[in-house]
Length: 323
Image (tube, rainbow, N blue to C red):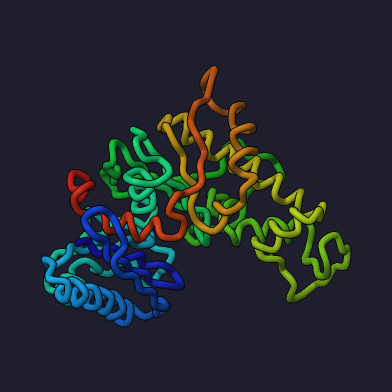
């Protein structure tokens, strides 16, 4: 059996997988935002729950893999690059081992997502897979022959903090990012980035789709509302989605030029925008250095569960990639 846990910014989800990848138990708890010690206890409580389930089933003690919103620094052994900032510069793996009493494997949540989809998801059988998280933040993970590529600095696949490629004059200098720079891909392609772009260009709107009423406070459309209104014919929201598709195509074209993946799998809340899978490949050719492009852009097979399943697969399938 394998325990997989996805440590998200708003929720912590765990699963217990059987030998064939079947889900034996699942549980979700809120993330204790801003509280490191409480986060440790929440993670430990999930593993305790699954340990009891395994013991009652007569199974061996399960392995534990955890997907995190950052990475373990090879230089310090502490967490870095977490948008859940209370985890940064903390010895999360060491503290969990001390609390739980056995080895714990950590990996970036985007690597876990990509691994899940490469092992038995939408990219199963592909040699090179790029997994993309388009949600509150923007992340990426690279998997080659079912092995995640961590990199010398543990930042393999972190395309979200590259500058947006082929920027236009009206995109400069770009929105500020929590990493300290401006114009990162994340600031344009995350859910908040989409909402901010709509407000910047079209202001804050209220009312039914197509209503031109403008309000100055309290009515910023969410990314979900923008997608819904675009589908209902709101021209302003359609304009915003068109800009989003264009930017996503540019950003992914740079990935194709660098990695030449067989499959790109989109995850996160914005991966549910069905039109992306048809529109983006029609746009990205102009920036890809090839006469033909066979890379497939696909939605995830396991949806929201992919990250937590990939964390469980950190044992066995991905042994060669784990430090």
